[in-house]
Structure formats: structure tokens, C-alpha cells
Length: 209
Image 1 (tube, rainbow, N blue to C red):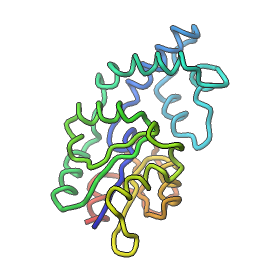
Image 2: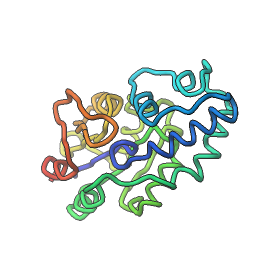
Image 3: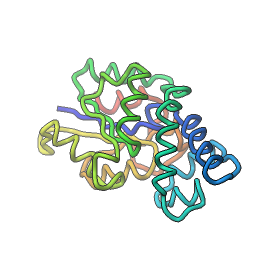
């Protein structure tokens, strides 16, 4: 058995416009702060160590009122502008047609992952879609990956698995779970020193199939 676990934002799809709009909605409504750029938002999200509440809302902790407003706004916003990167849809179909098991592990809330992936008409391809709200610790913890591998009754002795992502947290989660990792440079991060780096979705097929 072969298993490929994908990160979502910046790996399968571009969601930065909608994330930025919702963050800026909270900044304006609750904190009277000027808008942040998409570039700043992406850089902040991809930092290995960061305090997003400080970077986004200038608060030391992520207050429930800010989280609730963001999620309330993003529920509608998240399907306004997302798009799959070129070649991703075809790559996913090829993997499934070849008998490869595919799932998603994202640090986004699970409900938004389902909403976006179903909106883009690829949600049905994944066996498991899991977000940070379903585990105690998000990536780089291996917890999400371990839950997915458990679902498949994964055997490290006879099966193969890869984590595909666009930032260091994805790569570290793979290392912590004891599986291989593939870093993509078409999304939110243009470079990496990871052992396996790919520049287009078809490259994943060459590695896995």
C-alpha cells in the first residue's frame, strides 16, 4: 500500500486571498488596524515559530472574540477565491486511479478544509481530511499524520508513505511520524533544502508511482 498525505493551503490550493480578507476583517472591526498584505499573511503562516495573534491582531493571546469573528467571516469567505494549483486536480486523480491512498492533514480547522475541497470538487478523492481542531497538537507534531496512518492500518515494514507540503512544519511532521516528505515550491514557499523538492504536481507521480 502507498499513502500520500497532503497539506492543503499552499500545497493543493491557493487560499491566501480569502484568508487575508478575513484576517483584515477582524483587524478592522475589533482592533481598528490597517490591512495586512497577502505576502505578510503567507509569510506569517509559514513561520516555524510564531505568535499569529500578535502578528495579525497585536494581542499576546488569540482571544475567543477574534477567533469567533474570523471563523464566522471565513465560513462564507473561504470559497470565494480559492483555486487548485495547475496540475493538482489531474495529479490527484492519477494517484487514486493508480490505487494510491490519499488524505489531507491541515493546520486549518477541519470544517473549512471540507468546505474548500468540496467546493473545488476534489473532496471526495480523499479518504481522510483532518484539521488541527481534531488533535491536541498541530503540525509539526506527527499527531495528524499518525491518525491518518492508523486509519489505513499502515505497516512501516511493508507500506510506503509520503507527506507533501510547502513549509517546514509539514516536513518536520513527516520526520516525527517516521515517513518520507516531499516539499513543493509552486505554492506559498519558493524554496527548500529538503531532500526531495518538486516544482510541478507531475513530479509527485514520478516519485510515488
